[in-house]
Length: 250
Image 1 (cartoon, helix red, strand yellow):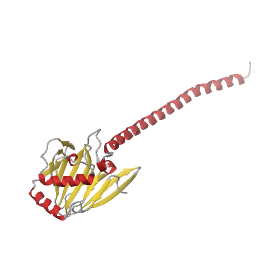
Image 2: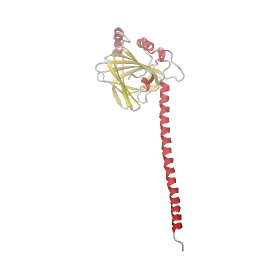
Image 3: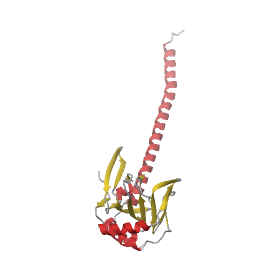
Image 4: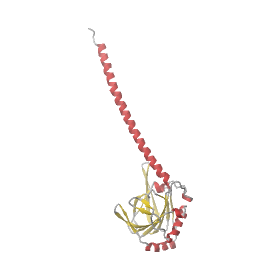
């Protein structure tokens, strides 16, 4: 079952472009990723918009996008059908052998996600529980390939990356949610925000339905108890009347 909203394109970049990016990435100073006091094996660098891993929210203060990433962002924007400026957050990550990412969904503040893989290939897994059934999907991220996460692939499915077998880099571009503004191009009808709201409403309705069912059971139990209490005296009075009427007269 392929997640709705997942798009994959091999060879989004050519080999010459990958080599040029490797040269730039080799000179880049990566920062550690610390979550709940634990330092991840992978390292990262943010441009355009920074990110707080503890609060899982973007921070509107980061380094400007370097010149060597501008054409890559334009390629990613063309692939996703959005304007390049809409890909406001750029996350560059370095994966040494053994580095991975656990199960997660991207933070709700982000919209469309576009990823580009460089170096070693990677295995991306997806999972979703729906109607009591767990659905899964796997995708091989080949070197120089690109993928898009939008729609249900972005909001309803979790994903994670298996440990890297060799050095790998990823460049991830993400839009920021802007309520009331439609995006042009392929992803103009991105339903991510609507799906989040719909999920919240469905959850609330389930809670309300559960409360109403409990109230109904309580009322039924109370009514049955009341019927028993009123029936017993009536039955006793009827029995007493029967005894009196059947006793011999003096």
